Image (tube, rainbow, N blue to C red; front, top):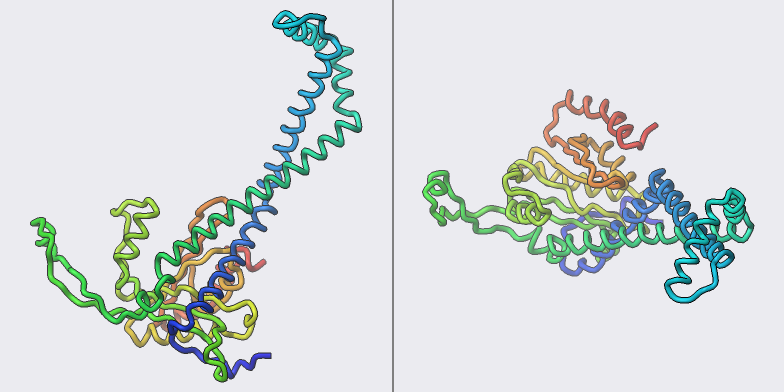
Length: 343
């Protein structure tokens, strides 16, 4: 059993890379599994499986009954003439009420009912596999995007001190000048890991603070890659910090590690002059979402990406007044109810 008092938070080092990636990827996979489970249990999915089963079963059984009718009523002949005779005989047979009744009876035979049950099972398995396969590809694409963005080189993204940037004033832009005044921006981003006092090399969890103003160019590039126009991009505020990459290894959850990590991020953000912490998460990460809301994060907006995937955007005022803190507490139940985490 891990003693909570033995847990401490320290800055990330390159030696932590493998453990941090494992912790984050396990978290990504667990969220992906929850999305698959919710998709499978969703009434639309169940209706889709049932509809496909009925249609495929009827088509196949109708084909078999039709072939049977052709075999029993075809005229003798070869070539095209024989084929035309088959279809003529079939048309005549289908026009007879007794034959139609016979066809209905064929559908009710035990052999056909067993066939229908088999097709239903196959359609169900194929549908479930397609859902799982699609979700797996989306999860892998998301992980690859994270590696391409910030997790590929955590030190460079979160711990690089300064960056020389070119800043153009309005007159320079109006005159079409491509060069502007070069200034240096300080990177206030940070990345922490939780570990044991006795085993500092063992990573229990992690969290990062992203200086979104410093990484505005990276955010713009990501915005454009998603197919959104440059005109819809909102320049990040220098007073906003984003909470990212919060994850606790499954073996060390329910020890208050996430709370310690968030408090560390909050204290650091305050010291560095940030006024607000923002975040985005999925409503499928129910445990994390409950923690965010109870820690004081308020819902900014809900964005539905697809039928089964919704993002929750929240923010936390770092210098909230006593009155604003009370309002946050009053809104907690409302936010939890909105995302289905409180009855």
